[in-house]
Amino acid sequence: MSGLGITIDARDLVRDFGTKKAPVHAVRGLSLEVRRGELFGLVGPDAGGKTTTMRMIAGLVRPTSGMVRVLGEDPWKGAQKVRDALGLMPQEHSLYGDLSIEENMQFFSKLFCLSRAQYRERRERLLSITRLGAFTARRADALSGGMYKKLALMCALLHQPEVLLMDEPTNGVDPVSRRELWELIYELVDQGMTVLVSTPYMDEASRCHRVALVHQGRVLSEGDPNVLVRDLECPTAEVVGGDREAVHTILASLPEVLASSPAGAQLRVVIAPGASDRVAGAVRVAGASLAPAQPAFEDVFLAKVALAERQAA
Image (cartoon, rainbow, N blue to C red; front, side, top):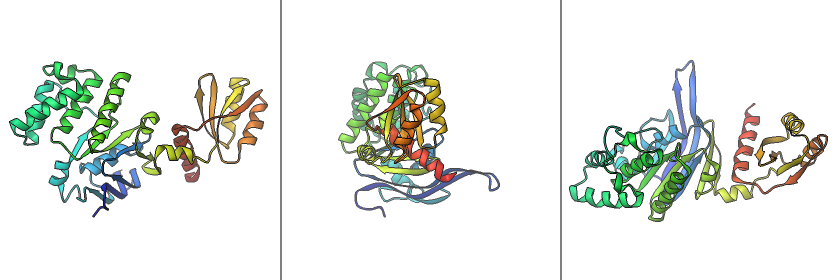
């Protein structure tokens, strides 16, 4: 049984695909706990194991080994209870393109066995918060990316779940729709819903109460994004001046540089602990200098990934 206040409890999850001779290790010993009423982020690049983890939690994919509980229930042994309590918004298109917004909602209401009165009340509320009321006759395959995502969210919420899984909900939508979707997520959490969201975007991750940094099927770090940034032991800096091409070459040759990326006209670097002086001396050869920079959440992820890959090498 999950602990008090724990909505999602996943322990030592492993999921392999392929064959015994040529296995593909999608998830490798992943553990996490999501608390009741929490906005929790699974953060990492594509093919990192986020979607497979979501599917195991939802009871769509059986773990090779490990344990999952949703509200204390096994998604396989207590499948109906979990389905009643869980809403799922998949990353891929999951609606009927030749049906309208109204028809898709009606279809899902019948799947959830809603009465006509329940459907009418929930339909009006969901159309109001998503502002799709004027488009109910439009076919799903004629919707913009943002409108399609809102329709998928409405269908996932029709049965009023306690827990919502959202797999990269803002993938492929415009900036305005992205902001509107996050406003909807905040509203749901404010109402007491538990939301597990996966994202490759570091700015979205920083909006969550807690996050798990996922890479190659493993959790590299977990916690409050602000605390993870505060506790980052790797210095961050901007490389100022110098010959850009020469600086690039120097940084690429230094094992002390964990990551480098453009930052406007400058280069931003994440440096191994205790190695700032060596990096500063190296870029000085190219006429550049290091200026200390405030760490950001993206720096945390880049540092954790680089250190994990070096340990695995």
